[in-house]
Image 1 (spheres, rainbow, N blue to C red):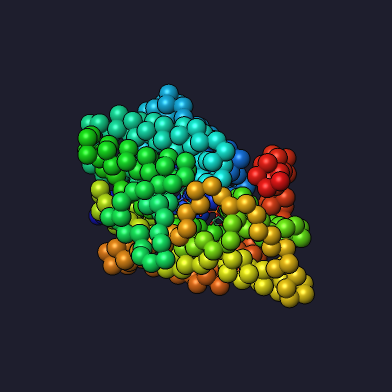
Image 2: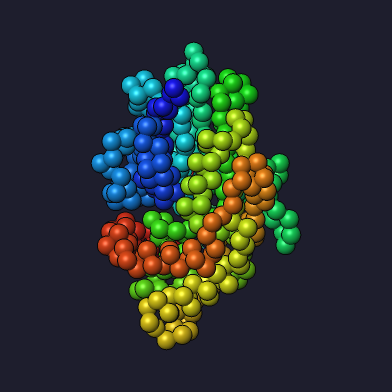
Length: 353
Ligand code: NAD
Ligand code: DAU
């Protein structure tokens, strides 16, 4: 008889935006696996994101900080995780410009702490073990008008955030070469969808439109990003994690490039309709402000490899995904109000005033 899988999977950063979608997918799809969500609950971590699975038999939450090596080693010794999906990170470019060291600590040192803990715990036998590292397309730097990032594009990070993620990718690869730690890396483009903290473009602008506050567009607004619905990213991670090749990198993207200003105008039209406001009223809130320093001009992912090798492609069009996202924020006013009180106001005033 076929043995039922009973793996202990550690997901870090599972209380955050993408992590919560990955945790939910794994808890529901793999009832015979034990899913551990390790998160220190920074401003971006929110257990409200996982209310629907918090009592599931195969789910455990571990409040811990990846910067605390002793604590992480102890957790590996107690639970003997078989596999890791590492998402915990400081993730906002603007915050990295204000406080780079926080990004070095969590994204670089925190990742190395996890790698050490996995290596020491698994040292006798790497069979069926995996360290899956979730990274970003920003490690590749910026594109001009043409071209796409492939898995072999050279690393050329421009912000403290992307430099810290690039460094963490290098450490993961180095542990693979030096200690033979089985790893996989995926580099994804801009995600959007439910539960994203309203410091990132789409949820920030939804929140401001609801409140009829100005929409702060950096520079001339002619910066391009490649947008992917968050559930499609979670599905891609699941697929690569279970079917991908150890030691490989997979680029994940939406085949969906938008200049910021065009996306913002589309969002304004959609919000006018959903809120029953006069056409054009949200667009009047658009305000061009000082540019982000080191602002990358264009990101665009070539996701051919994961498409050809693993059969993955986005399932949601941008129009559908954006409409679902707006609906989620309008239906979850309490969630939005909770995360935008207190410290958020301090951050907002410092960043935008
Ligand atoms: P997020 O900021 O929403 O969530 C990060 C989570 O990590 C939070 O729950 C936070 O509490 C936790 N965390 C932070 N520091 C920690 C620490 N020291 N110890 C333990 N937990 C800690 O981030 P996100 O947007 O969901 O991104 C998740 C991952 O995906 C990150 O590694 C990010 O670099 C990567 N990524 C994000 C995007 C995107 O568009 N958001 C795209 C590609 C890759
Ligand atoms: O590409 C993947 C990356 O996408 C992830 O690795 C990061 O974690 C994630 O934050 C995101 O980075 P960006 O910097 O591209 O996302 P952000 O939402 O901050 O900005 C998107 C674009 O919108 C960017 O060109 C800057 C612009 N922007 C952003 C904000 C917050 C504005 O014009 N005004 C704003 O207020």
